[in-house]
Length: 327
Image (tube, rainbow, N blue to C red; front, side):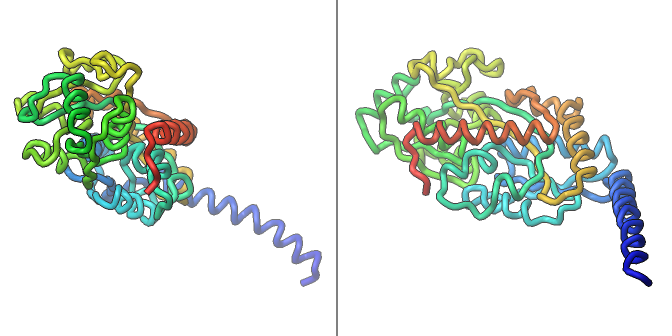
C-alpha cells in the first residue's frame, strides 16, 4: 500500500470511527437507565439533603421504573461523600446529591481539599434553595435573638453552637461577627446529630435547615429565635427574621444540586439533568419542598456551572467577612 493510499484510507476511517462512537453514545443514552441508580449524599440520614435525595429518588423511580439507592457518606467535613462520588464510574449510574457545602464553601474553609469541586464533577441541575432557623435549648432561658446576644456577651466563650454543614457553620460565624459575640463552634458530621446534642443540652444554639430544626420547634423541644432569610418563612410565620430581630442585614441561605462524576458522556448528562429536573417538579417530591421551606430551583447543566462559579465567589466573600480562617 502506497503512502497516498494509506493517507486516503485513514482519512476515510476516522470519520467512520467518529460516527460509530457517536451512534454508540446515542444508543447508550437511549437505553439509559436500565439498572439501579445510586445517589451519594455527603450528609447523614435524616438531614435535609438526605430527605431531598429520597424524595427525588422516589420521583425518578416513578418516572423511569428504575430503583434509586441513597448512599449516605457523612463525615470528614463532607469530604467522604464528595470523594466517593468523584471516584465513581462515569456511566450515569452514580449521582451526587449535594449542597453549596461541597461545591462552593469548602474550598474557602479548608486549605486543601481531597477533591476538586469543579474538575471532578459534571453539573446536572440545581434542585432547590432555602433558609435556616436559629434554635436554642429552652433550658437556656432566652426568648429572643436580643436575649441570646445579651447572654452571649455576658459569657464570652462559654456558649456554643453546633454545625453539621458549611451553611450552618458560616451562619453561626456570621452571627458572631455581626453581633460582636464569642460563641464556640462545635462541628458535627451532619446537622441531625448536632440537633440531638442541642436537645440534650450539650450545645446551646444552632442555625440549621428548616427540615432538621422546625419539627423540634413544633414539638416544643427547641425554641426558635429567628430565620436566616430576608422574609419570614411561611412555615413559621410567627418567627421573625434574624435581621428584624436585631441583627440588621443578616441573611444566610443554602442550595441543593446534582452532579455526575467528570467524564460522564454528554448524552447521559443531558438525560440525567432532564430526569432530575422533572423529578423536582413532580407531585411525589412536592411534600419535601412544602414541608422544608425549600424553593424548587432547577437548571440545565451550563446554568448550574455558572451558578456554582458565582456562588463560590459569594461564599468566599461571606467566609472572609466572617473572619473564618481556612483549616
